[in-house]
Length: 446
Image (cartoon, rainbow, N blue to C red; front, side, top):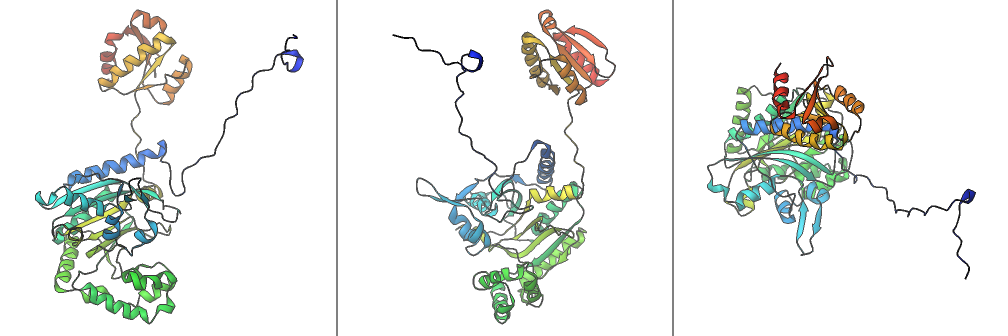
């Protein structure tokens, strides 16, 4: 039987086996999301640190709630006719048949936790702080994302105007600690269950005669969420709003006195504000004080940096005991964009002054162990363990600004010694490995 001939390529050489073809796909971040790259992290680290310090200074405890909840929490709490529930909320059904929603805001979840864990039995008020991602199916544009991040502060259990002001004061302190100055606080009162209905009736009467002068979205709001008529950014609608009845003229005595005291305390604290009688916010649970903070002369279309207000009925709405509350949230992406726009310098994390350099298999192994010992002694050490040559590692050490290089090659590893190199003068000294940590500490002090 004749032997099979081997297939040959060019010039009579045997052909190489072909590499299997991989199925390839092009992937990228989902629409409306963004990656936070290493070079951006300094802004996020700085903001988180300032928020944590403010929480400590003003007595807020950290709370982390799930990123998804029962969808009814937001339908009832945030409001059936709000834009968040009508257009932006992400909902899904589990395999077990539960209807859940990704968190579009923090407040309803925090109130749910307050009730569920019996926080009413704690000394009141309860002051809570959260920070993390939220999700809204909003139209992606500059500064607006479908997954973004918020800072949230809540004071639950105090009906007095002091808590309204402290929420504002806390956020002002955060912006000032970030060296942000060009911002304006807008404030209003939208009344309570006693006085708000009368105002809404007069507002509807006013708009009913002018529906042909407003946008289609406002005509939809007329029937479902009339206060949002005042919040429209359409220039045509703004002209109608400017002549609309003002809620301040309809406040009951209790709401009027509460708001008067809020403004007086802000004046005492020398926190400047602008009274905006048409500020309403977009959520159903607000009562009395509402406020927003905007970047001065903002033409980016990104909206408010932060906003909030009082919500005295939300706890009771979830079958809890009647409990007054106030809170606010700030968009982290918007604050970071504001930092960049004002060219606020954020200091880089201090780079290690000591750099570990290794050569050979044994040198690398001992370097890894020594690297860990330096960490346990509180000394930050840089490294480039993936680089094989001393020249390339020294180049990185020099670029990183290291003052001391520790060189551990095969010879040193066998002798349990290490070379200490002064990166400025180039002077080198060999010491025993067991003495290197104390020697480095001494040199760093010098």
